Length: 74
Image (cartoon, rainbow, N blue to C red):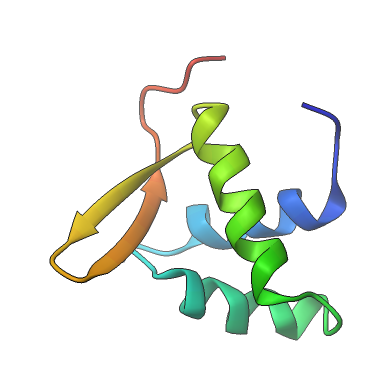
């Protein structure tokens, strides 16, 4: 996966919290750093981070949450 500043900021935000944030929460936190980012970019990068093994997806009823992967692939 190529380096992306947006992806790096998203990963740092997910790793910086002790909760299991939703994509919307990540969006609002990243927007403080990268004001022009879109929600679609957040979802796309969360999926890429999950595929790469950096984060995990947690299905909490109707909500989808994210967390750092304590056993990353790489």
